[in-house]
Amino acid sequence: MRELILKTEIWPVAGSFIIARSSLKEITVVTVEIRENGTQGRGECRPYPRYNETADSVTAQIEALRFDIENGISMDELQDLMPAGAARNAVDCALWDLKAKLTGKSISELLELPAPRERLTAYTLSINTPHNMRSAALKAKKYPLLKIKIGDMSGLDACLAIMEARPDAELIIDANEALEAKDVTTFRDRLSALPVVMIEQPVADKAFDSIPNTPSTLPIFCADESLHTAEDLSKLWAAGYRAVNVKLDKCGGITAGLKLMRAAKTQGFIIMAGCMVGTSLAMAPMMVLESFANYIDLDGPLLLAKDRDGGLTYTGPKIAPAPRDFWG
Image 1 (tube, one colour):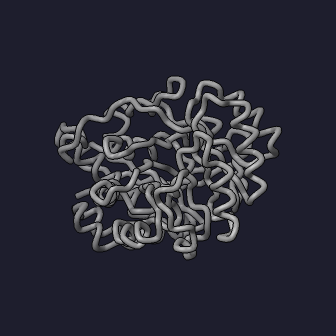
Image 2 (cartoon, rainbow, N blue to C red):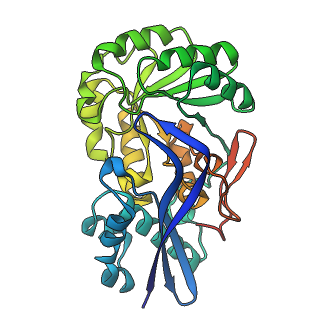
C-alpha cells in the first residue's frame, strides 16, 4: 500500500520574470510524494494558467486518482487515466523516482538510456527595454546561449541591441505567441544574418500554420505552445516548423516525454529540452532525456530567488544531472 502526499508551494522569483503574456514575482508549484515501505518518490509540476491549470485544478485531478495511485498504478496505466498536462507530469515523475529508489537502479537504467551528462543550458532574459536587455546580456557574459523573450515587433530592437553587445553569443528568440503573422517574415529577415538559433512560437498556438512555410530559411521556427504530445508533430512539420520545445508539464511526464522526443527525433526535428520556471525537482527528470536534445533550456532554478537543497548543480553555463538521492 502506498501513501500519496500533495503539497502546494510558492517560490519567489529573483526580481521579476516578464514574458509576452505575464509578469511573475513568484511561482506556484504542486509537488507529489508517493511513499512505499519507507521510500518516497517525488515529482513537481507548475500549473500553468495559459493551459487553464491552477494549483487547485491540478490537485483535484490528482486527488481523483488517489485510490489508483495508492493501490499501485503503473506509469503505463497512468497515461490512460490522466490527460497530458502538469498533473500527470508530477505523478509520473514521482512514480519513476519511487521505482528507481525501490529497485536501486537509476531511471536511465530503467529506461535503457545513456546516463545523463553535463550540458550547456540557455539562459533567459525577460522582456525589458532594449537598453536594459543589452545590460542584462552583458551581465550574463558567462552564458554563450541566451534566450530572449519578446512581446511584439518592438522586441526586434532588443535582439539587435543584445547582438551588438554580445557578438559572441547565440540567441533563441522566444515570442510566446506575440507576433502577428504579417510581421513574421520581416522579423525573421532582419535576423537572418545573425547567430540566431531559432525563433520560438512566433504566432498564436492555433495559428501555428500561418508562419511562412519556408523551412530551409534561417532562422528556423520552433513550436512551443503549439506542441503538447507526439500527435502534434505531423501538423507542425507540414506547417514548416523544424524545431520543437519539449516540456514535461505540457506532455505529461517523463513517460510521454520520452515518446515525444523519440518521435520528434525520428521525424527530423531539432529538439530543445525546455521547462517552465521551477525548482531543481522539475528540471531533474528532463535531464534524464538530455541525450535526445540538441539544446538544453533548463535554467528555471536560476530564475528563482532560491532553489531546493541538494538539487542540480549549475557551474557557469553548465548544468549537471541531479544526485540520485535527490531524484532518479
